[in-house]
Length: 504
Image (cartoon, rainbow, N blue to C red; front, side, top):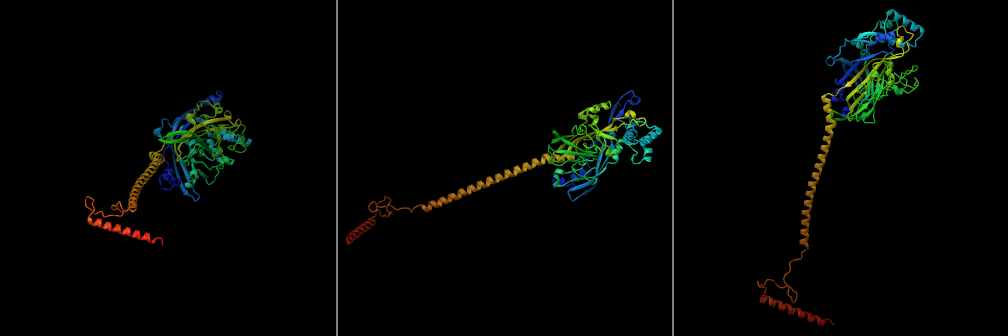
């Protein structure tokens, strides 16, 4: 685990991150306008949208220009591309669509508060080119190669107004998907592992006026989260297409791939704002602009100030937006975002990031041919980035790290403890046996030292020892009797003499 934190080139953790496995699928659902003529003629008050999809791509992510810094951070450039997968698609990219003309409606909305002369010039160009607010294109063109004569003319006249000439929805997403990011690594940054320190060399994105909304610090691109994730943590997910950092909060415990996991979800109200919000009170609103309705988040700062906004797919968490068009079918199970991760390692096991892009058309009643679209929120498409699982080798490594290794360590600890107890028991038993043998020897020595010498037989008359070397019947010999008698006489004589001397 500590080696993973160090991100050493050549080791599996670094190599898997540098070129992540191809496990992320991009599913794109486009909205087709089915009542073009009725709406333009006034017979219908609302656009009717039909969802078509999914069109399935594989998102390829590569991390390049990796540099390690002495302050415990690592910088790199993240490069993302989308690869169409014919084997997984049942729909043709050549299918026809009727979609908003992003050049006409987008530029008209952008100029809604422009000067009279600017609007007049734009009206003249529109009439001469006969560009329409709704166009018929193929799915391929809508995604990768969408343009209009208005774009080319306007770009020559006012380059800063139209900085690009290809407005394909996926082309715009991936054309500029090269971001320099600096993240925290190393054992000393375990709780901040792979959280962003800087984005393009700065701790702020430069998109929003308030620091709390514009800060890049602490965000993560979602490839990996910090180790030791807790239920009370806030995970901060960053994707450039959302033009902000998104919070994820704990929802519930789950079981995935034979391991315990935590599920974090994007709040349903993440795009809401306070009632009566202004640009001064809502930090996701540029100064001087009117805040978007709740349920929408402005993407214009990330796309050349083009009037687009993100929402939940089909506006599922914003019922007040369901009325803007017909054909929305919100379903939380299909349209909410989440990540399921293994908490010990912080590695995502399954994830789905879902969002919808919408064209915001302001009051364009003074622009030729587009007045019917004033004050509209027009869904363009919604996309799902889905991590469908883990490669077997990452799964095996995680399972060993999380499930096998801890139990192996416990078993080894228990075995060592049991072995120590057995050794202690055997040693104690041997010590006890030695102690008992030593004590027995000491007792025997003490017993022999305290025992009196063996006594001979004594005479009952004078208590003097007599020879026990008699016959086997115990009768004394004649010489022994004579000796005994002489001894008695001598004793008596000595006693009598002593009595005579005593008085003096």
